[in-house]
Image (cartoon, rainbow, N blue to C red; front, side, top):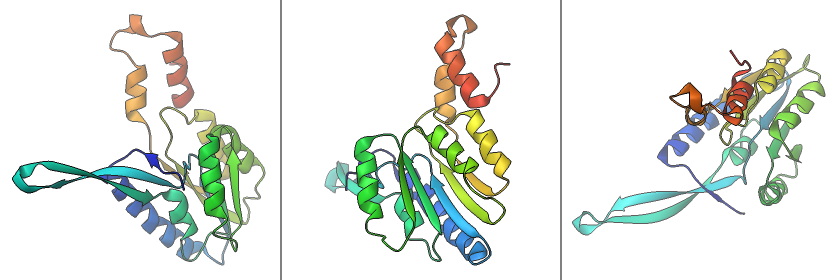
Length: 197
């Protein structure tokens, strides 16, 4: 598998909390609803982080640790989800997710390549929400989640949303001086917040 290099100890905490939640969610709803999981920015299924350990004389020694990501957590959840969607834009990551999915032949898994906003909206439109419930995990690359996507998710009234909001991404687009607000920056903020006010 191809691991991505990002994150740190906070990523491990995030995954621990998510994993515990997914297990509790499936335990509560299994057998009552068709339950699905959507990972809108699934990556490659694993990532690598730098870890430092104190060596003699307080020199820091770096090591790389490969960590299983949110996709693997959802696949290993017991009881299991009835249907899992992994969405990713990069071809290399899609191939890694397909390889991961091939390890779980008893589960219904769709690996979708493309814009996460479009794919999530398609899933929302194409699902019968009367007998379906699910969890959607939005851990975007910067300001990738559009307000319209959140509105469509909300209309299902059936998805628990985990949205790791990219506050730093918004700050980067919002200069201190209004005179430095370019059209690109304005459009980026409008798209993520859903208003130009």
